[in-house]
Image 1 (cartoon, rainbow over the protein chains, first blue to last red):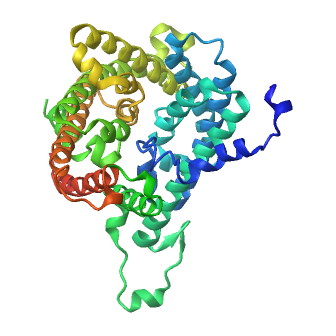
Image 2 (image 1 turned 180 degrees about the horizontal axis):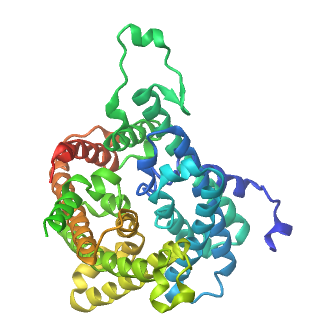
Image 3 (image 1 turned 120 degrees about the horizontal axis):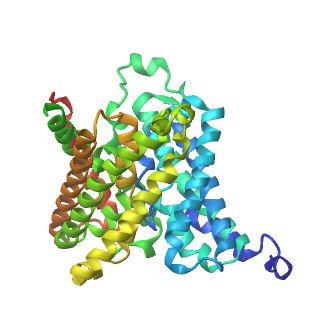
Amino acid sequence: MSNKEKEPMFSAKNLKLLTSPFNQDNPVVVQMLGICSALAVTAKLKPAFVMALSVIVVTAFANLLMSMLRNTIPSRIRIIVQLVVIAALVILVDQVLKAYVYDVSKQLSVFVGLIITNCIIMGRVEAFALANKPWPSFIDGIGNGIGYGLILVVIAFFRELLGAGTLWGYQVIPQALYDLGYANNGLMLLPPMALVIIGVIIWVQRSFNKNLIEK
Amino acid sequence: MDNILSIFIRSIFIDNMVFAFFFGMCSYIAVSKSVKTAMGLGIAVIFVLTVTVPLNYLLNEYMLTKGALSWLGEDFAKIDLSYLSFIVFIAVIASFVQLVEMVVEKFSPSLYNQLGIFLPLIAVNCAIMGGSLFMQEAQYANIGEATAFGFGSGIGWWLAIVMMAAIREKISYSNVPAPLRGVGITFIITGLMGIAFMTFLGIQL
């Protein structure tokens, strides 16, 4: 890696790669990538968190590997090579999850496999890793993975809190409130509400970042 | 036969790919701006799902599950290749999508240009991979049921994207709050449509 000598590991440029996906370049609510598979896992905080971690790992390493391979792959067959690399990484993640957090892995069911087709990973490999050196690509992967994870965790937070009154499986809304007539909003646990929450997140975010508003 | 019909109806309305599982959201959001393009992509998805789900069913049945290789002989009966299923499924899907892409380019260049990047991206459309993975999880009894599931899921996705495109064509005349314009309102409408589709939930087939 020749860029290491030229610039420090965490130069301003690399830091920007890491942090810009958190907000103004967020993969989910701005780039519209990776909404696909993961919303169904946001009914509870714990699976959402595990899913976010898995995606961070896969994006980072897929970006790193593809960036290292980028000069040796003919562009015509690159899609299939990317898919094979990503699928191999996802199989690794899947086996690790099965070995260490079996109950969460059961809850995530097919959605671990669907990380392969998560557009974030393909999108970042296509848009960034194929044109950049390994280290920046790795950072970009981590940044986008975290940006995605943030959204996932925020959605899961609201859905679990309002839908079940718990966080991470622990009761947080006190019993006294239920005695006063408070009731859990079961609608929040249903899949469509995840979409509505994303819509609201987009709304809030765009009212602060005016330049993202569509014409 | 009853079973096949019920799987078919279930996969269109009750387990709708978009409204129940959010599969294929990326292209769903991006391509649903006009009904015509949405129609083209929807039909391509139906086609790809109808072919890849049964194909993957056969592969799963005769190659991947535990004991599936027993037709090769006694020695192979114990092999369990199910951890390879992701890679096998995605390889089948990717190569098939490549084929569809070539066919569309040859016979309908205008549709090819309209769909642009989203045609190759069908390969990573979660609806397609999701179809195969759900098929594997549901353990259908025969290939007829698997095909019905694939076809039904495709129709469900097509239905969702065409409906959305029609609504978005109308909504472009409305006065939506500026930060919600575009994708924001699309998400919320999809959520509302999802709630509407949940009324199918109680139906017994």
